[in-house]
Structure formats: structure tokens, C-alpha cells
Image (cartoon, rainbow, N blue to C red; front, top):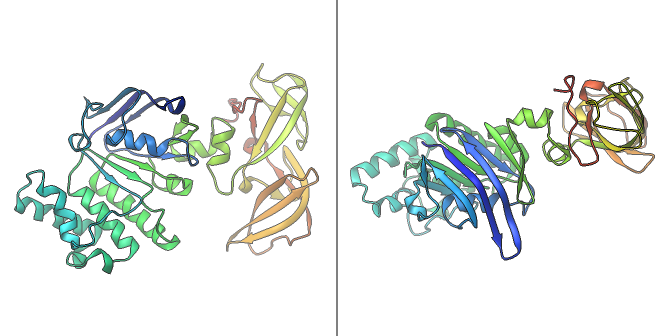
Length: 363
């Protein structure tokens, strides 16, 4: 396995900028997930690492070797696509060994690699079957096995689970996590599903409009988002936001017009009287009928009952919809008017530019 470095990478199609000043260092054996909305540039970045697209400027370095000018076959990478891309006229064994024949790998070595990959992925009973005889999850495991036998420096995954149903997504996600532990592989994984990202990643790269918004460990991004975009994208359901205006500043605290019943602790000089700001709080930090730094009321429109946890969708008087997590059997009913509160340590404050205001207490 190898490290991967991306330095000042840009990609444009005419006047359209697709990637802007991308800097990213991935350690050997690290599992890094690229997430972001459709069109943010994550798949384009993966394709440029693979050599399928050329950068407009910047460098891509794999295992200490600059690969900008190298063809995909020379980069020692293996890519698993959203579509399985299996040869329908070949059985599983031949699908896994086909690419090795053209790289000069001896037959005995090919058989050894297939046997080891089949063992890891539990494909031994399927080696003589054809793709038409396999389920979606089995086909994706064959595609992953085809990548493993190449023994690449870096694995690239482009939304590999998006064609699977919910149950298969969970089981295949577990297989990929187990595979990473076994191989200690360097993996760059693209997905639009932030739950996949939170589950699999050592670090997550959050992208938006061709730029990197934040890089960090999953829980660091969840509890310490850098800005409004990351706060709203990471987490399901998403963070609730409230628009407020600063009425006055007292020392290191800001009093606001809005749902807050207590002053907000903010860094000195970060806000001034009359400034607009945004308060954020996650659904699990809102409690019904409790007390806290933030308090608001509204009418329940819908309760999603998911078992131990339920999500109450509450319409406030200003017509804004917020979501609160409710635990246990006792849940509000549609039409109920409820009060919600959150403690000060779970309230995030963002300035007018969308940047999270970080104090010693909020770190």
C-alpha cells in the first residue's frame, strides 16, 4: 500500500471550474471518504487520481511518484465502479483473472491471488458461476475481488453501493470495512451517502462546489463542523438552524433576538450589536419540555417512529420546520404543541459568513 498526495489541483472545462485548489494528503493504509452533493467534484477528483481525466494544474503523487503523465495502467491503482462492469460471458474466476493475463502474471500466481481474494470475500462457492447467476451484492463483491487480485497501491471506489438495496448496502458496507482491516489498504471512497462515510472512514473530506470545506475524523466533523454547510450535510436528520440577530454584547456573551433564552458564548470581537447569526442544534440535543440555553415551541406535524428513537417534525410559528429526536415509547402526536430546549454546550453559533464561532467551551 502507498500514500497519496494531491497538491494545488485544479480542473476546468472551458470557463467552468470543477475543482479549485484541492490539497489532500492521505497516509498509507488510510480509508478516506469523499462526500458532498451531486456536482461537487468528488467523482471528478477520483477520476483524476485514476488517470481517467487530466488536471488543468497541480500534482498527483502516489507512493512518492508523480503520476500526472502516467496512464491509468501505470499508476498501480484499482478502481471499483458504481456499475459492476463484469464480463457476462465469463465466470467469476475468469472475471477476476482477466486483467492479470495482460500484465504478465503467471498462471500459478493468478490462481493464488484469486483463491486468497475469494476467501476474503467469501466467493469460493461462486467461482464457477456467471454474473447472470449472481445477486447484486455478489456481483459487487466480484468487482471488489477483481480489484484485490491486482495488488494495487491504492484502491478507488466510486459509489460502489448505490445500486444495492438497503439490506445489501449494510452487509456490503460491513464487508468493505472488514476488507480494509485485513488488507490494511489505502482506500479513497466516493459516496453521496454521509452515513456510509461516517461508518467507513478514518477521515472524511467534505466537498462543495469544487472546493474542500473540511477534512477530519467522522465524529470531529459531526461535533465540530467548520461551517454551516458541513453542519447541515453531516448528520441525519440534519442539524436544525435558527436565524437570529445580536441585540447586544456583554463581555464574551451575545444576547440575541430569537429562540435563545440565555446569552451565547462567542469569541471576543466575533460578533457585534446588530449582526446577523445562525444558531444550530442537532435533533438529539433537543428535549421536550426541558430547560436550556435555547428554547422554542411549535406544533408537531409528523412523528417518524423508527423503534427506540423517533423523530418529531415540528412547525414553528415562523413556519420553519425543525426536527427533534424522542426516545422511548412516549412520543408526541401530530397536532400537539410542544416546547423544545437544548443545553448551552450543544448549541453551535455561526456568523453571517457561515463560519462556526469556536470558543474554549465549544471545542
